[in-house]
Image 1 (spheres, rainbow, N blue to C red):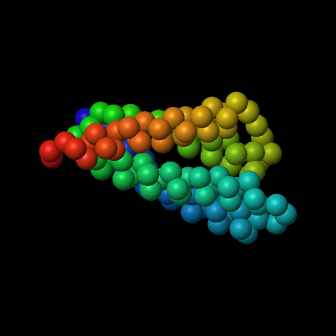
Image 2 (spheres, rainbow, N blue to C red):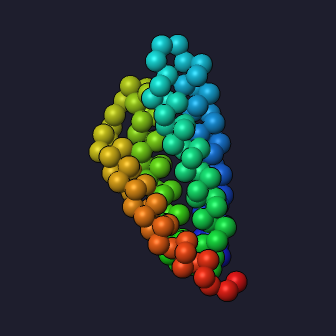
Length: 122
């Protein structure tokens, strides 16, 4: 579980880097860069959550599940939106709504997991 916890935190940090890059691309894009900026914003917000949950996930399977579901959700959601914004392609249009649903589920799992984990002794 410790290795997955470290991987979650590292992957969350990579989402943060991708979020900054997409937000910058959206800001500097000629025309409408709003979709790229939206994808970047979602990556940034969820990167912080995945990194934070990942640091505690070594002691809680439920936190690991929450972080994993958030990570998968934001990658699907932001990935599909970013691909559409930057290339006009939509090879898997269902990815954004599925990713959005997974992000909601991840936050709900985190809402249950965090109080339980905070009650555990380290």
